[in-house]
Length: 441
Image (cartoon, rainbow, N blue to C red; front, side, top):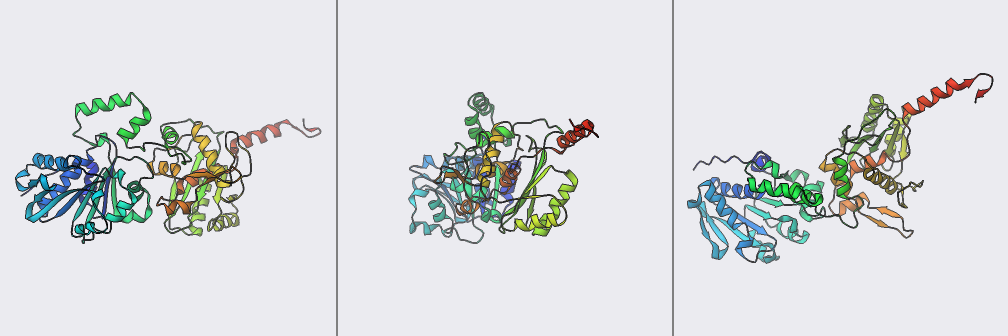
């Protein structure tokens, strides 16, 4: 049987990918669940004898499963006659002796989940509700060669285990294929759905962003920078002027999966100049790139994270005659800044200064990667009631990627910088007022 199925463009990578982990996240009306159902059915036609399990976190009845979605997909594709549903047993018999099973993850334990060892695919719908324990139980069970685990979800919290695994944890980078899909990616959305979207758009902005744009639902009490102010800064454009300082920040990679990131900011604008990301570059290569950027852009200040291997970058730049300032993240906070709370160390101070800049009119690029970096670190208070920002190593322990781009941007707030044009103007004024007899008056 020949099927001519053309998935929406946004989902095409998932149909082609051989990656072990497949994911589609986004807001309402994206069609991600319909696409997953179509993909399951098409695979059972083109690869007879497959075994698929469709999972929800809790499934007390078949009505809570994707059973109806799978059946309606078969009807729409004109292949219903090739499948034999058995609703009483929560399953559908597929071509070639294949099987589509519907279960709640809450029904499994370490013993009975072994029955899934020979399955070809698991599809977890509404996976934002998956616990870390449930993921740890399922993942090693599907061990058949070529088996895949598919997840579809509307993001809820940034800390949700499926979100960490498929969007943040760098350990899964080479094993996953993940797409973001929202209403605009669905060519089949109805007029009624569009009407509902516009009604929500006219209401609460944060609620709309979560429901329709796939944004995280709520801010954690321990989250240092909230997603709301970040998204507002990403929607904001600001003018720049020659009197605005141009600052360059360099976060140097410490570990193999970290990235060295170079970021530039001019005054309130961090939007127009994209970050430079170097993966696996040694200190000499990083120093060479920093010096090249300094030659091209003539920044008014350059701040480099000198902890770990970053000290070598600072030393090399200075050796070659470039004026750079090394910043020790763990050093003491060294000045009071209006609106910025008491901070335990230099890194917390830079991030707190950056947070105030974002809140007071800073402009950021529309980048999910940067949003995740800025909203990722948690914070606490030390015995002196000073803010302590979560360490990169602790973020890694909970599966969250190192916020290298966020740290690079924070470095542009290490110390006050005055634009070279301003100092040149002041020098010109001083020279003009200089009297050879009386000096400056």
